[in-house]
Length: 301
Image 1 (cartoon, rainbow, N blue to C red):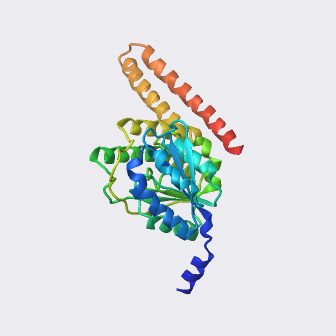
Image 2 (image 1 turned 30 degrees about the vertical axis):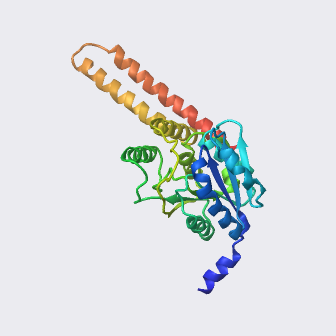
Image 3 (image 1 turned 45 degrees about the horizontal axis):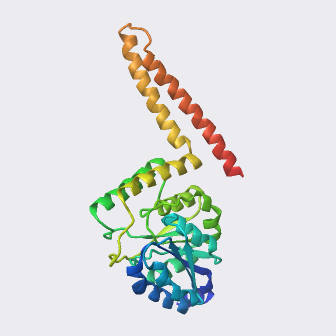
């Protein structure tokens, strides 16, 4: 009990900024933001709300909060996307840690403190608020998340479950360091975790609870999964390109060898198709080596 008391006393509550992207959330502002503001005042946290080019009354409803001492409201003239809004908020943060919250009111305020205590107690670089075991949307969205998670695991070692959780806390300096790598799309949530993992930073998970969205519409669509998969491929090529090039090269080599072997066994000579596949296999492998060298140069810089 004594150690816990000393630990809590050592926390500097001014070390955290809550970043909230908001796009057309007029139906949730009044029910969500006052509670967050009251909480931030009590704990001396900062709040940055990014109105991401909303076309409804979100900007008008946020205006009264601009006078609050712990709140900063940023208005994007045009919609930059979920990731673009978060990147703007991270750029403006000046505290040691940043925590991301969605403006749909699905997160519990108590989990902010849970993640904050966790990252300090473990000296982690990023902690994901894990929704594992909870209902997080329709069966279609659940399948999409499963597909993205397992696709990422095929390409790199991942020890976390809820990659695309919208609630994450991380060290601000590292968040800003890799800012140029994050996409402006909904894939931001997945990619920031993969970037931290790829750079060998300590990434952990902490269970959180979520509520059902009470109002407004989610911006997640069917093409979100496709965009996320493409962004994952980009990140893998950037950090470990042979994970992509080598399997493709092997596939072409095996296909070309099997095709050519059939012709050779039947004394039909060398197959042109087989030769092209084998040449493509070598070319893809060499491209992988070049990409690997470029990746190593980038890491050294």
